[in-house]
Picture 1 (cartoon, helix red, strand yellow):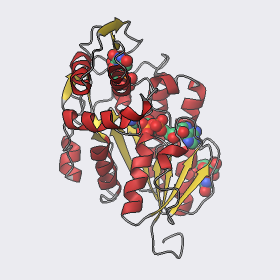
Picture 2 (picture 1 turned 180 degrees about the vertical axis):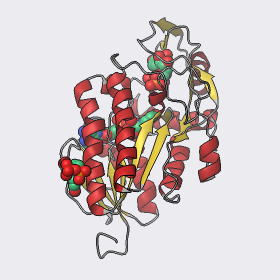
Picture 3 (picture 1 turned 180 degrees about the horizontal axis):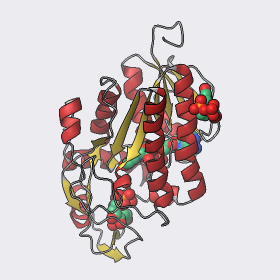
Length: 317
Ligand code: NAD
Ligand code: UDP
Ligand code: UDP
């Protein structure tokens, strides 16, 4: 049963003031949903929501999801969690609490409301993978006690909770494993590789490659990712996931640095810094499940997405 007399679907987006959440909110409003954004503004900003602030179907609530939340909603997208290593390692205990207590609270809320609930999980559940590319059936290679563990293990436990609520209470769940995503509204100082390289290139400062630059990542443009989120949320109840969403085109960090220099016309040089602990050597999604169950695949190549992202970052130089 719907939770309000309004004809519109009422959708809760946790972490909606962040990079991905703000893009998702734009798409949901565009299609006529009513959106409640819940965010504690730890890494997110009101600036990301500026386009929606005065929208009649948009509401913002400052709240930390490690605490219970009593609202009436039809669907929940649970995105709240810092995503960049420097942010999630700033207060690692809070990071685990956000993933675990946050999931419990949002699942409790979904259970009471009879709402369908979506979890933003991550390719980090595969850790430093021994299987390449990574299919959803791979259980991963994760260090439980390292500096990345608060994020990786927190997200793994959240997945466990989602599947136990599904089995135990018959709830409708949707779990997506997101691979590295980039685009406008990424935080320019969040330390992730795409924002670092673009900002360094635009400022003609040295481009910092960690290690020898041969490690790989597969980068998905934000619009492609959000289209995948909505397809998964709208899929039949038996499609629970986990589903990998990402762009399988794989690049070394050296290739990415060269592309950033070329596209910005920068005079930056490349410098090498030590590789952080537990840094995965390679990462590429196997997206057969997304293709088959959701009819989804990415459409925006890195060259093109990078150009749009560079345009956005120019305002911070
Ligand atoms: P982000 O840091 O821009 O956004 C996260 C948002 O969550 C921020 O607005 C932050 O203020 C909010 N938040 C953090 N802790 C909270 C709490 N306890 N209560 C309420 N709000 C809280 O990051 P993002 O890139 O937009 O990532 C969104 C989600 O997607 C995260 O769950 C992240 O783990 C996942 N993800 C992102 C990527 C990526 O490449 N961007 C990859 C894998 C997974
Ligand atoms: N919860 C919430 N909002 C709700 C319902 C529940 O935040 O509308 C939280 C509450 O903190 C609860 C948790 O979700 O402890 C898990 O709920 P559940 O019903 O699974 O278990 P409970 O702890 O209530 O037995
Ligand atoms: N990286 C880099 N220079 C930077 C920032 C990151 O070479 O200035 C590397 C990092 O060591 C990793 C890759 O780029 O191998 C992706 O890092 P990011 O933090 O963006 O994402 P994640 O490691 O979580 O995939």
